[in-house]
Image (spheres, rainbow, N blue to C red):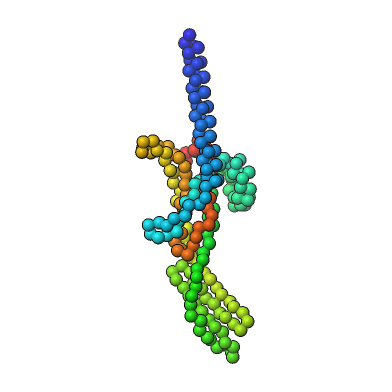
Length: 194
C-alpha cells in the first residue's frame, strides 16, 4: 500500500510540475504576442527629456535565430556564440531641428560666399552658400539611456511575480524623437548562476 501511495505522490508531483511549466510557457508566449502588437509609448520625463517605453520580448535561442537572422549574423560576426547572449536592444532615433540664423557675406578671391553658423547645446550647423552651390555640415550629439525593469503583477494592490519586462529609453537631446525600439531577452528555463 505504501508503494502505491509513493508512486501516486510521485506521479501527482510530476503532473503538477509539468502543469506549472506549461503555464509559464503559455504566459511567456502571451506576453510576446502583446509585445509584438504594442506600439512604442512616447512621453516626457519630469526633467523634460524625450522618453519611450516598450515591452520586452522573451525569445528562446532557436526562436531568436529564426526571427532575427540579420542580428544573428551580426552577433556571430562579433565572435559571440548565440547561446551566451543574454539580451539585445535596438533603438532608432531621428533628430529634427528648425534652424533660423543670419547669413553674412565673405569675400574669398573675388568671389562672395555667404556663411552661416548656428549652434545650441546638442546641434551645430555650419554652412556656406556659393554662387551655384550650398555646403552644410550638421553635427548632432545625443545620449540614449536604456533602463530595463520588471513590471510586477498585482493582487489586491500587493505586487508579486513578473507581469512584463519593459525597456525605458531616455534621450538627452530635446530635438531627438525615438522612432523605434525593441528589447529581446533570451529566455532560458533556469537562469545560470555565475
